[in-house]
Image 1 (tube, rainbow, N blue to C red):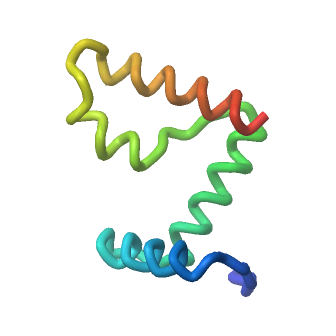
Image 2 (cartoon, rainbow, N blue to C red; image 1 turned 180 degrees about the horizontal axis):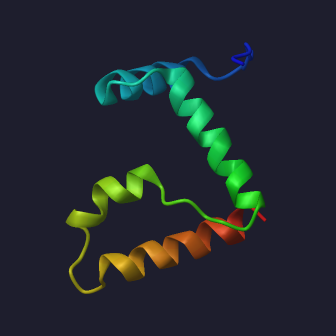
Length: 82
């Protein structure tokens, strides 16, 4: 069941978020919902892979493998949101 949520954010942040959502072809509500879902997943001890990390992992330095980068980022998220 979808329920409304009111958020108070800086106008610039809202404008940038809307532009990002539009460029990715998704709604801003979907982005926020996915973010909240990832936060609740982190509480359960599982760190989901960041969509941003997935997008940029192919352009990062070849010195470290994508698997290692993803593993390090998961550890970072787990430490940050515990």
